[in-house]
Amino acid sequence: MAASTDDVFLLNRMNGTARKTNLGDLVNIQKYDSAASAGGAATETLTVTGLAAGDTILAVSQVTKGALGTALIKWTDTSRTANQLAVEWTGNPGAGAVIRVVVQKAAQ
Image (tube, rainbow, N blue to C red; front, side):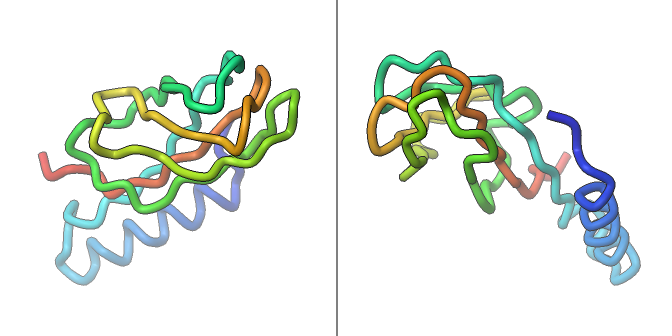
């Protein structure tokens, strides 16, 4: 899912403000949408291209409901690897659920 104009504006504004106040890339906020879930179970590991193992996750939300319409209830940071995040719904979400992950990028 592509970033909306409003999303891009707000992320650029937050990052621009950080740079102007000499925080530089310490406050580099990015968002990534996952690939659609396959469904079949309440717990699934989703592909989130761009998510690094060292990024600090600020928020995880569901942006597209799956075919069965269940709600996202948690994510598991301890098992995270690059480009993947384990999530859990109230039940099988069905195919098509998409999550959005907002992170502070790890210092380079």
